[in-house]
Image 1 (cartoon, helix red, strand yellow):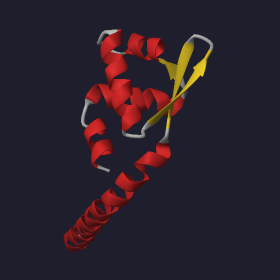
Image 2: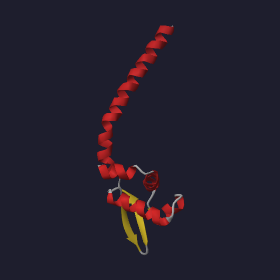
Image 3: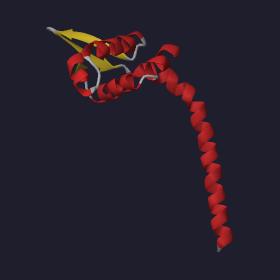
Image 4: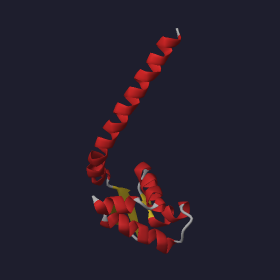
Length: 105
């Protein structure tokens, strides 16, 4: 999970993942959407591959990158405890707001 979190720490890599969430893309297509040079995009793609967040397949002279969402399952499970914490806090806030509205009547 540490490799995935480290990979997600970079905004350019998160942008790559957002693009790949919608559709597969080549390194060139990804480079066209980022404000960095192609060698930088290649380095980011290598980090994402090593973290297990993207897959690559060869099509003739092109490499097509796709998102591997299953690699985010462990991070999602880790975040679940924090979601529950926030849900309890938001429920308590809702209760207090409703209580305040009753008192105003």
